[in-house]
Image (cartoon, rainbow, N blue to C red):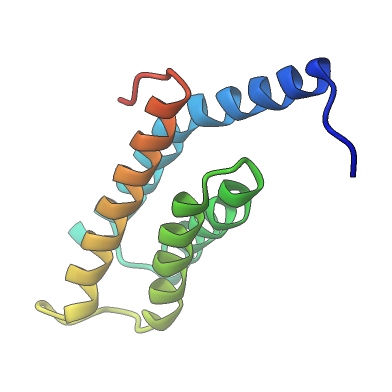
Amino acid sequence: MGELSNNTRKKIEALRRTYADQLPQRIASMEESWNNLRLDRWSSEGLTELGRQAHGLAGSGATYGFAIVSEKARDLEMLLEEMTEPCLPEGDSRIQKADQLLQELKNACDAAARSQGTSAQ
């Protein structure tokens, strides 16, 4: 396949920047969902929504050239798929693992945003 034209390269970089600009907001939404689940609103619907958000990042991160975002989001998605109980007991190790994975995903998103000259929130 031939080299990309300068115009095409600029369009791709603009798309990457736009995507990176959106990452802090997407992570903030995921953190809010997770906090709601953890505090006292554990529900299969909430868990499904958080899993959907992680799935979206898992697919789109690599598409936009942020493989680590995809990797961390996929890890979180897979863990969430295991957490199907109507209520998890206090101290369940998966809760701490999800906390850790969400933080790792946030760090990856922050790094992706910084790499595009976007200030992470």
